Length: 388
Image (cartoon, rainbow, N blue to C red):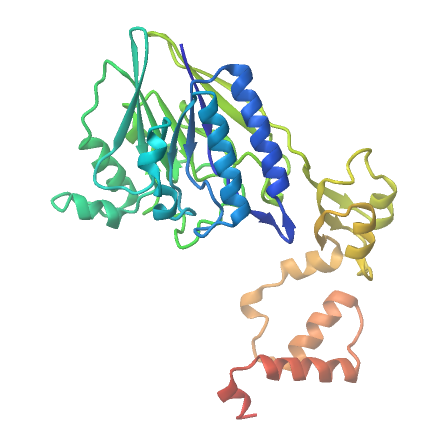
């Protein structure tokens, strides 16, 4: 039997607002290493966005170095591709040397879908590695093909890859893969950058029909796409408010003979959880759950009035409060306003006065209006400011 662990979107070096997450990521890496030991995995699939930035911090590179060394010590093979956050060249640096330690990196698409093979008795498993690609990159290598979309690009790559269908075939990819009429659930922290998620970027899951398991990266919420064998591992940590209710996990893929591939989702528990709490300030501060003071907290206050230094007061109890917003009659009224018509035939003074009245239920003083006029003038482009 061959056992593989599927990881994606580590985003080493990422922060949560002003909070550094390197300690949380170290804790999670150690937990992943413990799972690898307990499950006796033979290989680890890392599906891109290894780093959070194309120029990673020193702490992030040290953490990846530590992770790979620990895996190599246990003779676990590593199959790693680049994601859209990674610098291809930086991630690819030293790849030939890494390969001698069974750490295989495919960070730059060079016209070939690279493959590594694992053998267990009579079972041969081919692992293909597809780094993050755009249609323009693939078009360069296949000028005679009609490649207009990401879907065209990936289908072209697979079509031009010689595969042995008597082997078990696994693919690692970092793309936006969608089911039939259904997009994957976004976590909100993906930060896809210049790549907007639209019809050009979507890849239909059916283009992976020849693969028994597709280890995907790119989307941070763990989920299957189309069928159980096509899966986003999700990020190992919660990186946004939308992920507060996510249960993070790591897929373990077991391959044995001609049997169906078995997928087990093993839970991951963070050093500090991310929670969303809601209610009046006095109630929330009085009802602090035990052992939760170190968690990352997003707060939605339902108090009707704005509270002075709300962040400072919350951080006395919850030092890792990330953000505070309000949900009350004032904010709901603002949400119902037709923004497209709010400025019709109204002066700057009228607009500011209306907004203040809506938020606070009273009129602005002359002094407050004077401050807002000054702020408005400073915000204007210089050539317009000179005309006033």
